[in-house]
Amino acid sequence: MLGVYDFCGHYEWTFEWLRQQGGEPLVREFWDAAIHQDSQWHAVQLILGKGFAGMQEYWSHTLAHEGAGYHTTATDQVFRIDMHACPSKGFLIRNGLEQYRDYCDHCMGWIGPLLRRGGFVVDHQHNHCGQCWWEIRHATDATTPSRPGELSGERDVRLRPEWELGAKPMDTYSRATDPDDKQV
Amino acid sequence: MGSGAFNMSELPYSDAKPVGAADFYFAINATFRFILQRSGSDGLRRYWTDLGANYFAPVTAAWKLRGLNGVAAYWRAFFAAEPGSDVSVRQTEDAVVLDVKVCPAIRHLREHGREIVPCFCQHCYFINEAMAKPAGLMVRVEGGNGSCRQTFLRRGPATAEQDLAQIKEAAC
Image (tube, rainbow over all chains, first blue to last red; front, side):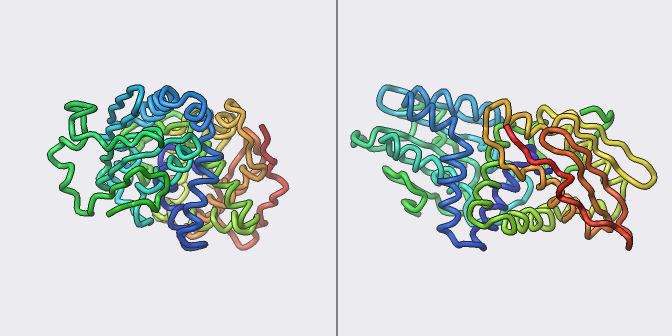
């Protein structure tokens, strides 16, 4: 049986299996069709139905269930997540599992298209070490990303001493909704 | 989980939390549907077989070394980490039998009104068989759609093939 205890391991393995079957386009189609439009339809309902309040409700539930070390900040204009210890990337690192070239892209792969449907854009960075931040705003809001500490205070992940010390270059997304909007 | 003692170190990959997040069953079901729609039954069976032979290779290695003792220990630890399962694991001299009284995946998908891929329960046969075969073992599955029996045996020359008709289709 395929279980959920080690879900992130076989999920990540599946990305690479799909890439070998149909290249990167099939992986992106998987994140959009299978994860965004099928698996995560509870997130779709909450976020499209309630906007920022739905984001708070969805991520509070799911990140707590997954055992994440995270902080969220919500205002009328922006929803911010500071991920200090991503449970799924942490699982992969601890178990030495890396089949696909960048597991972290899967989040933008399903969340990006969902937010685009809701009229939102995302500023986001991940350091490939289980740490990232997201700022989600209405697409009509031209506000630039906050400075470190400005929105989430001392819980801003960018203030951690190891934030920029990862072996891989930081991935940056600016007003993005697509995993290929990445600026490395 | 009704089988008594278990040891999480029997699992090849370890997490910081003792039990998995049940909502991930949604993604497992959606993944099967995605591959089935794009690659058909043969493609989905190939995915399951590749997963069993590759991702689960550390489990196969342990079963090669320890035989049916390893099989029983693995499944006790496995179901202890699956939320909402009710499974007994019995070992005899010749077999390990999993009596799945409540399949945690089917239960969670049903509780949340998810459309379950009809051939969902076949994944247990194809993945487990791919794990077992290189260890000189085999699995035969009967039932499904929420409860089933999975029997692990030593592979012999007169072994009958799995009859897929013995595995029920899953439904909400």
